[in-house]
Length: 258
Image (cartoon, rainbow, N blue to C red):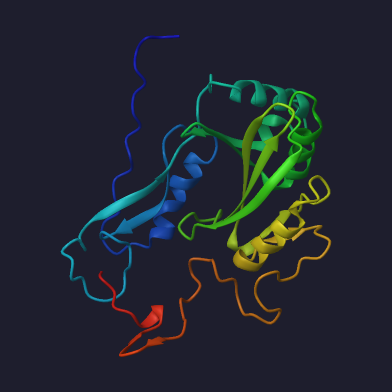
């Protein structure tokens, strides 16, 4: 290995003017989605706190900061991460749609954690390999989390699977994305039955449809509830809170600072 220190990636220039951030970030997102080590830009934060409605009373309204996620990591990843990825690569093979190079879009190592970004069509095959290969043995999916990134055009909805290997005492994260226009991701309930309720909650809160799930119904909200409350484009709404001598207005009526 060379002793020369790695050059730091230069963050993209902030977007100026009134351009649509979603359209502006499309090229950046696509360029970083497959193996590029540069940070992945998914949007821009304006002001100190992020709200965009109302008048600015803080003096920080002119701040414009790009929202950057870690880019792909380069080998060697360190720790057991190299062994896990090499074993998975061998298990998936190098031919076909579920080969390692096709199934794994990006490997990210950040803050001492390993995340494998998996192409959604390959998720069932990757999940079975992660569970069944003797050198991997991720027997448990401890949870399925949903995330909504409106600025990441074509990859707005993410499902994140947190895996635990009791055999090897290791943890790995799988992350799968889907566009808003086709919010479907294969279910992993056949591989990890405990993901049943986790996928139901993710659908309830974010609207991700897990194809093949045995009973994808609401788990937190009433059956007739409109929309999915944890999406970033979901209206705040709410009701006023009354107490002796005053009232706190609902979130969508409170004062904004930008």
